[in-house]
View (tube, rainbow, N blue to C red):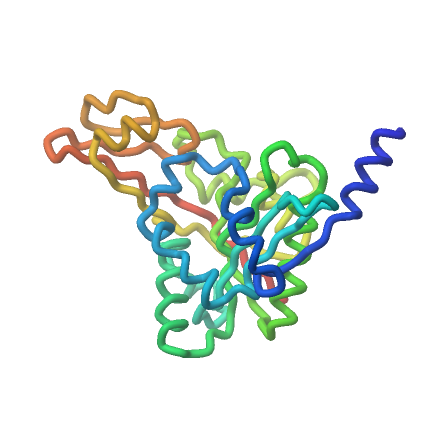
Length: 256
């Protein structure tokens, strides 16, 4: 009981800050270790997303502990969406970020917000930090004047490479009516609704040599290759010397 009390006290000592309030935390936020598979970080859209920190630092949040260590982070960006789930882009993460960039650089006000990521540092999971982070995001985005927030989620409970239809998986519920997937379930508990699947949320392409480097797999044959951390297989084409990963995600909609 003393250990649990100490952990609770430590978690209560966490502070939520934005990068507008603490710009010096940017390096620690970006360096925070997460469960993202390494090859996903090779996304060309992700590589060009640094503008969100420069143009919208108030949308980038971190939880820091008493020693000023970043233990959770969330990235979001205003984007031009009308709040209708039917109009969310099928290109998910990539599509929302492209729409957000267009509006931001054109100087247009975007009425909604897209939650790009909410992550807890390795070694800190299972302590309620994801919920705390999402609650902070919801409150901050509401405070910035938004009433709708959407996010393309990677379902954490889906077996990597299982081939299970993502729409069917996202629709699976427990006896209490909440989603079976733990990440979807947390969002729904906080008031979100599952809005559908975005079949091409993030696309990562590369030469076969790059995929060998990223995954440690041989990539010597044509066709699907299951890779660690992938929700779906990577598809290899040896004649073209390339392989492509197209990840589906699940849209959730928070009415703030």
